[in-house]
Amino acid sequence: MKKNNTKLKYFALVIMFANLIVSAQTQGSKPNIVFILADDLGYADVGFNRDSSYPTDRGIIPTPNLDALATNGIICTNGHVAHPFCGPSRAALLTGIYPHRIGAQYNLPNNITTDLGIPTSETFFPKLLQDVNYNTAAFGKWHLGFEEGAYQPLDRGFDYFFGFLGGGKNYFERRYEAAFYRRLGGANPVTNEYQDPLQRNRDYVDPTEFGLDEYLTDILTDEAVGYIDNNASSSDPFFMYVSYNAPHTPLQAPQAEIDAFKVNNPDFEDLVRNSTYVTNSNPVTKLTDPVEREAKIEEIVTARINYATMVVNMDANIGRIVDELKKDMSVFNNTLIVFLSDNGGKVLTAGAVNYPLAQWKGSVNEGGHRVPMFFHWPNQISTGQTYNHLVSALDLYPTFVDLAGGTIPSSKTLDGVSLMDELILGEDAREDNPIYVVRPQKGFQNASINLGKYKIVKKGGNGQWQLFDTDTDIGETQNLVSTLSNAQEIIDDILEKAVIWAKEFKDVKPGWFDNERNGGHPHRTLWFDTQELPQYDKLFGSSELVLGVDDFFDKIYAVYPNPITNTFNIKFNKTIRDLNLELLSSTGKSIKKIDGANVGESTIDVSNLSSGMYILRVKADNDMSVEKLIKI
Image 1 (cartoon, one colour):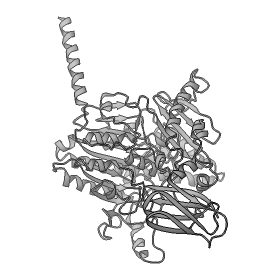
Image 2 (cartoon, one colour):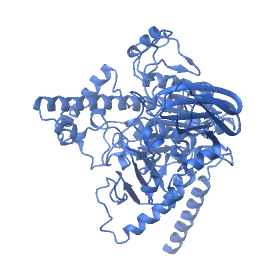
Image 3 (cartoon, helix red, strand yellow):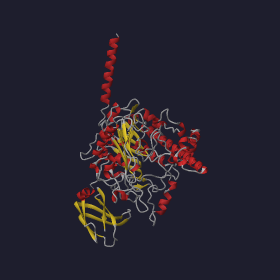
Image 4 (cartoon, helix red, strand yellow):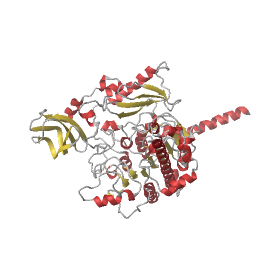
C-alpha cells in the first residue's frame, strides 16, 4: 500500500512540474503591464526587503500595499539598475542598453530649453508595444529630453503623457507655478526643470486645474487611476509607466500627513534621533561645535521623517492603483505589476536607508544600484516566491516586448535578457551574463561587475579590484582577494568579459553634462581636452581599450585645416538633413552656433575669434552628437 502511495505522489509531482513548465511559457500572453518606478528609494525602506536583522533605530517605514504585492509575487532580492544616477538609469530602462553606448552617462542639463536628449536612433520599448496594439501611457518623471517632436514621451512610443519632462519637481504648485507664469515672456524666464508646470501630452496644464496645495504624488496617481478606468474595458491591453519622483528631494509632504506619521509611529523620531547611525555619521562627527552637531542631528531626523511620510504616501497611492485594477478581477489577475527604484537611496540628510548595503546613490557599491524590485501577476504567479539570481533593469525591455508578442528590430542592440519564464521557474536567466556599473569620477572611472554570486569593485584612479561574495556578504564587508585561493582567477575571468563589453563603446563621448554652470562642467575638459577620461583601458587592464578617438571621428566627418586661421571646413561622409554646429570655449561656454540643412560640407568663418583651443560640437539629424578639440 505504501508503495502505491509513493507512486501516486511521484506521479502527482511530475504532473505538477509539467503544469508549471506549461504555465511559464509566457511569451505573447499579452498581459496588461503596470511598471512603477520609485525615485531614490532606499533598499531597506520597504517592508518586503527587511528581515529581523534590520536595526529598528534607523526607522521602520510601513509599506503594506507594496508588501502585499511583493509577497504574493516574486521578490527579486538581487535586482540592479544600470547606473547609480537617475537620468542614465532611466535611459537604460527605456532603451534596453547601457547608457555609455550612447553618451548618456550623465544626467541631462537642468534646463527646460535644452535641445539634447536620448538619440532618436534608439527605439524605446513602448514603441514596440504600440506596434502590437497596446495602449501606452506615461505618468510622472521623464528626464530623457524636452524637445517636442524628438525626445518627449509622445515621440518615443507613448499615446498619453501626464507629468513633467525634467528630472525633478517641487511637490506643491504653490512653490513654483505662479513664478513661472509671472516670468513667462520676460527677459528672465524660468528655465529650471523643477519650476515649470505639469504637462499633459504636449501642453502645460491649465494653471487653475489643480490647487496650489495639492500633492504631486496624489495628482499623478489620480491621472493613472483615471487611465485604468478608461482603458480597462478596452479589447486592447495597456501599458502604464508610472514614474514617481518620490521620495527624491526636495523632501516635501503634506504637513497633515507628516503629523499623522508621527502619531502612527510614535517611537520613530526618538529612535532615529538617538541612533548611532545618525550620531556617528560623517555629517555630524565632522562638526566640532556641539550646537552645530545637535542642529545637524535634527536636520537628519527631520529629513528621515519627511522622507518616510513621502514613502508612506507613495505606498498608499500604489494601493489606489491596485484597488482600481481590482474593480474587475479579470483585469487585475491579468496585469503584470513590476516595481523598482531607479537607483539606490540618498541617505542621511536626504532621508533614505540602504541597510544592509554598502554606500548609496551614486556609488558602484551595492547601495548605489541594487534596488527594491518585484514582479506581481496573479494569472502566472499564484504563490509568493523569492528570486535570488541576478536581475537587471535592462532585462525589462526584452521581457515586456516578448510578453506583448512584439518584435525587436534585428538591428537593435540589447544588453538585457528576456526572463519572465526563468523568474517563474526560479532559474538563472543571467548565468554567464554580468551586470556592469561604471561611473566617471574626477579623472578616472569607478566600476563594479556582478556575475553570479561574485562581485568585483574598483574605485579611485589607482584603486585595485576587490572581490566579494554577495550571496553571503551583501554588505561587501569582506574582500576575498587575499583569502580566496582562486580570487585572481575569478577576477580575470570577469574582466575578460568586461573588455569585450567595453570595446563596443570605448570611443563614445558624453552627449551632454548635467548642471553646466560657472564656465562649464568640471568633467568636460577631462573628456574633450586632457583625455583623462574614459580610461577604460586602465580600469579593465587592457590595451584593447585605448581610445582611438581620431579614427572614430574620421569615420564620421573631417575638419580641415586644423590648426585653423580665419576659416575652416567640415565635410561629412553623407548628406546631413539637419546640421547644428556649435563652437565652445575649452570650459564649455557657447561662442558661436551655425545651422544647416541638406549639406555634405560647410565652411565656417572664425576670423573674429581669438587664438586658442575650442570645442567643436557637431549634431547631425538627431542621430549623432560628437565633439572635437580644435585650435585657432
